[in-house]
Image 1 (tube, rainbow, N blue to C red):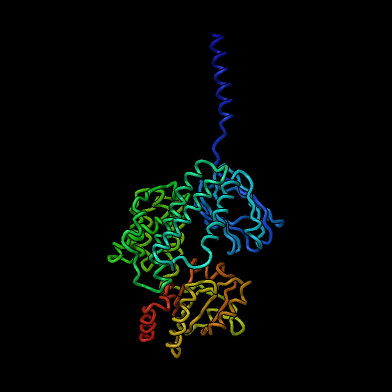
Image 2: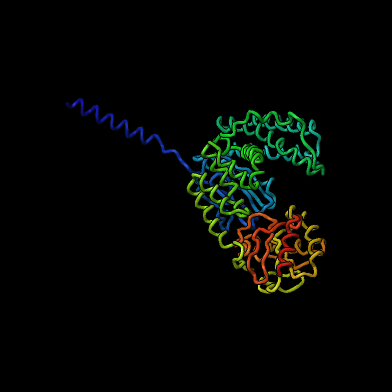
Length: 459
C-alpha cells in the first residue's frame, strides 16, 4: 500500500511539473516601440484589426497587446509612411522610427526582428527594381519577363536571409509566387487604362499560370495580401457570369456567398460589405444576401450597424448637416444656407486621383445647369494642414460652385454621418435639405443629367 501511495504521489508530482513546463499557447503579440515626429498617430490594420490606433505617449513610446492571428499586417503613419509587419502570437516585436526619415531610421528588435527586417529589405528591393517608369505600359512579353526577374530576386533575398522561421519561409515562398501572379491578373485592366486602349485584351494563355491556384486556403489568406487580391480577382470574374441577371455588386456578393471555405467566405464577404453596402442601390437585397451567407457573429453585427445607419440616409430623410465650413471665397458656409435649391455635393480631396478625373465632367455639368435651381457644392476632406494645397488646386483648376473645406477631414461629422470611407462621393438633396440620393451618380455618368432633368421638370 505504501509503495502504491509513493507511486501515485510521484505521478502527481510528474504531472504537475509537466503542466508547469507546458506554458499555455499565447494568442497575442506585445507590440512596443518609440517614434518621433509623429503628427497623427500610428495605425495597425489586417486580420482582426481594422485601423487599430496605437496610443503614443508624450515621449513617443507605445505599448499595446494585440490579440491576433499569425499573418501580415500594415503599419501606417501620416499617410506617407507604410510598412508591412509580420506578427505571430507569442513573438513580441519592438518598432522604432523617425517619421521624417522613415526608411533610414526604421529599426526592429525582439522575437519578430528577423522576419520583419526581411520584409523591409524586400520592400526596398521592389522599390528599387520597379523605379523609373510604369511597368503596365510594357508589352506582354517584356512585362512578364520583368515580373519573373522580380520574383527571382525576392527568392534569392529569402534564401540569403539567415534565421527565418521555417514556417515563415515556406509561407513566404508561396507568397512570392502570389506576388508574381497578382500583377499578371491586373495587367489587362491597367495596360488598357494607361495605354488608353480600352479594347486591349491579353493574349490567349497569358494567365495560364493561375489555373492551379487553391482558392480555399485559409493559411495563405491571412499570410498573403497578394493571395487575397487574387481571390477577389477570381471571384469578380466569376460574378460577371451573373451580372446580366442582377447588378454587379449583388452578383459579386452572391458569388462570394457560395464559397465553401467558411473562413475565406466570411473574410471576403465582410471585406466587401463593410464598404459596398454604403454604395448599393438595393440595400435590402444586399443586406439579406450578406446576412444569409456570413457566419462570423462580429462581422454580422458590424455590418448590421452600418445597415441600421443607412436606414436614416434613405430617400426623403433629412440630410445630415455641416456647419461653418471654410468657403474658398471667404467666410464660412453651412448646409442650411443653401435651402431653396437642389444641392449636388461632391466630397473629394486634392490627393484623390478618381476625384481629379471627375473635375472636367463636373465643370461641364455646372456650366450646362448654370441657370437652373441647382447649387453645386464641393467639400474637400483634405487635412487642415493641407489647406494651402486645397486653395491652390481650386485656383489652378478654376473650380466653380461653392468650394468648402471640411472642418476635420474624414473625421468630420458630416462625412461620418454619411458613412463615407471612399471618395469621390456624390450626394443630391432637395430644396428642403432632404435626401434624394445619398449615393448620386458621378458627373461622368449620363444618369446624372437624366436625374437633374427629371427633377427640374417635376418642379
